[in-house]
Image 1: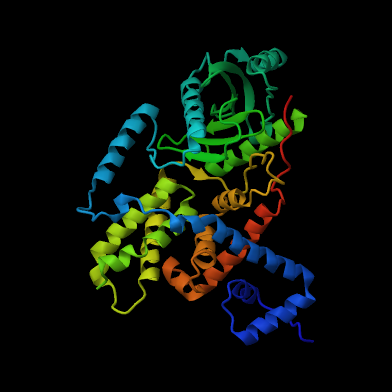
Image 2 (image 1 turned 30 degrees about the horizontal axis):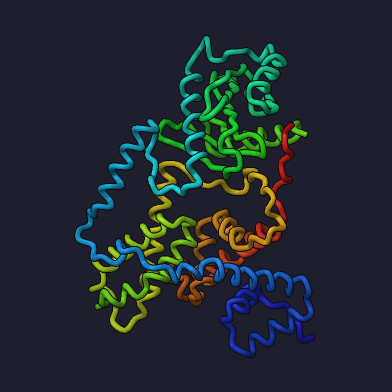
Length: 252
Length: 168
């Protein structure tokens, strides 16, 4: 039979045109007899084409002057400017060290994460006034927060992770209200879920900083979520995924 | 010895690769600038007769990896598939293929994205790619294979999670 199995490497080498004619023929015979593999190879070829199309225009762009000028010393003006911007931004945000070369699209989400993280640090340190309204009045809390947020606010059950809901509070967001739900585990460790209408549609991101607070951010079609706690990243991701699932299940 | 002019000739291709790698124009040009600075200070080490292009791409790759490491030590790392992705709204049938590929590319792990681009965009051989990235050729092949398969899933509308319902 002419269509003996072809190794995965050979399929990629076929896509990348890195085979000699005899090997090409072998792959072509194999693909002729294996529709699923042929489809996969076609998809990889399409990927190559899309990549070329997407980035070809960069070759035609005029080269920015700064790339054409001879660099002087290792500590260039650009580095100095970067350090200054970094310090200013660090001071403005009050946390960690942020690279000023963030993608522009990250701005709304990084602002939101900053607000969520700040709210987490401030209110999770409160022993007696951690929440504005207690979880014992859950229905009242949900009604109130949902009304103010103009979106269905849910209180996900996180007992499988050892966290019990304590309650919530309303907070100022960027242009409107935001709210925070607070949870506590048996060790007294606090976890918060920050909900906002800002940054809806932004990509999920994980933030951490020297204070060991990790924040997982994501959004759905209506609300942006940020879950903060001093937990390991992986555990927090699992909790965040549970929160996202809960909002989705109850949302319809 | 490599002349400054020979290095500068490569700027457009370095910019293209950096743009695809970082997904951001300014970060990309910063990466190019760092690459050029380093290449110029090290051009005396360049072996005469060798191809300047893989050498420059290797410098860029090292700088990129260092950047990721220091960024990861500080903050913001895009999440891996463990997290639900935001619902993709209204563009499933729009044929916005270019935007799709750019976005999907950024969802790949950095090391898979780098290999896909070196091979598929810059047309380096597998052996050259292995030298640029500094891994065995078998690792290049497995990154290429996993990366392309993930990209196929991302582009092919096989959603990682069920799109979120809009909450009323």
